Length: 603
Image (tube, rainbow, N blue to C red):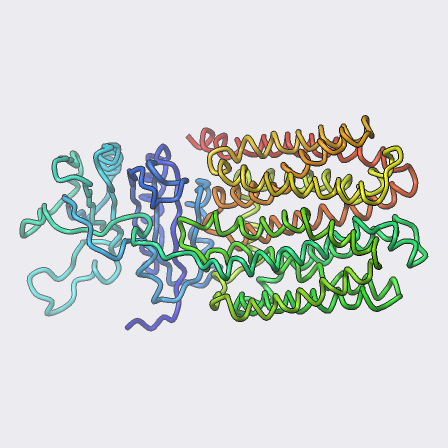
């Protein structure tokens, strides 16, 4: 019906304590924006309902949503004054025009309410203050102002007795909705040329809400299990060199440090692909992308198993890194397609469970196969299994359309949000500290007196068992405690590595390995939860940044760590890992308060 196939639209959200500043800024903003912009500021007092995300349930928030008929660059420029107020959530982007009905995020079914409203032809400071005062009533479900103007403000010839809704472009309609008919709310002082309604409209039906409250669909467990299997084989192939480092070095005639570069090149590919896969393939169905990742991993494992050239193996491992990063960058988007919004955390845990299973069973079984047969046989079997899972992806997963178009600017803008940049830096240091020690864990375990290959396999399995338990335990409490876990977990990992260094005895190292696995294998859940709370409107962008940081850390750990292992030995490398974990935990902890500090500064 409109000559626009798509439109720049979305929502900004703050805590309700920002209502005065947001309302004043919006009033000034609407006085300057062109007719191509329409918007609605709202204050919502949300009930503590299980259907709502934990970030919103039982909370009061200030929201501005709207649509802009401009180019992306011009729309970004127009939004800058509002974005300078550091919203918690920012969903603005390019959407099909048909999706405009979802921008206000009304539930599909009518919701009973009592409403009062006034038509305004101007918005003086007194009216803004009255709106803020009225919105503070916790008995209200929503208080909002609706930005009119444009054609509605221009009298049309032969339009009848009322030829325009308002007198100028700034004209707004103020509406206060109540969640309960017994609640009486007034808007004192909002008289600025107010017009009473022509007919009684104090009682009507409204569908104002922040998120859809429709009944949720069941989870697609078949698809989630296939995703778990794919992550299992990808991670097994990624970290199998850690367990067969000595055998690979002897077979290829290289040093253990050089063999460790098979992990470095995998991480390098991940670093390059994680942040760009969404940009390079913006329209490709994400199910097809996962199938491509499985195919690439299959080719990689077969090349590693069959060729003798280190250069060819490094190229194949680069291909594996690209596949892994494509998988993880899209994992949250795929999880959201396979589960209803209130169960997305549980869906994400399936991918993390695949990681834990890889450390519990995949890598240890691969090491056992390399001891009994040959390390190349292990890669060959993993390649065959990955190919089968790729077929299962096509059969078990529904089509997964890509998220809204991404861009480097969007990634940078996400990184600049309060607390996000510091949190990502802490994330990189924590993963770096872990992998500096874990990449060469085989050499650390060989320091145990009279240790044999079977004992090393058992210790690696204990790391995986700890990780599997950690996924379950942390998954239960992470929504309530992810901030504390993000600090305590890395510190405990540093302590566990210290035990491996200072007490190289089988019993002590066994306990340390289990604790180490418990906290690091759950790190992906912690980081994904942090992404969900800090950037729920940009899951694909946040996921790409987290994976990029993860792969950057692995690449540095394997590359620099390999040089240090060959020159100064494994113990100093472990100490470096401990220091990085402690610094990363401190930095992540400081970043968690960044948004709160920004809010206090803004007030």
